[in-house]
Length: 242
Image (tube, rainbow, N blue to C red):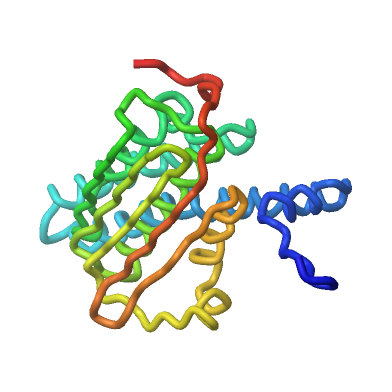
């Protein structure tokens, strides 16, 4: 290495350094909780609220449709309540905790398409009963949840494809939608996109991974995530084996 040149510390090194002090640990915990609240219950409650709005609009002209929307909204509120309880207990979403990321992604795809958005989940190299490290599972699920929510709520997408591929040493997540897209400028975009995209990137980087965004008006959005995996890892606590 040339004299005087300093290497940029890896993401996990920066996180460890921050967490070394009590104040740093508290700040990191606050940031984690804010991400989990935004990506979990907040997204689910937003979907429930939209469903209630649809039900109100359909109440007079289509009572049966209004009833279906209200039932779907009630289910979403229950899911959000489960997530809040899980956060209070320091746990992950129940389905993710018990059955893993594949089941959780399929559950995400099965949520009522309140915006008329179909979600397709594809997996490669990992089956329904197989598990990844707990922190990787949580990050991949939350990133997928946020990306799908953005495609439904902001992109007016009719179709979202969530692809998870697991290979030796790496997990790759790809979320592609056919929505209206947006003007993406990497040098400025991270600071202009609220909590969503920056929070997704931070989740990937905390695990030493990367997140790339590709989007343009009228061309949909593509989010690609790569996260390193250890060669061997224990089963997450509380998991169910198939």
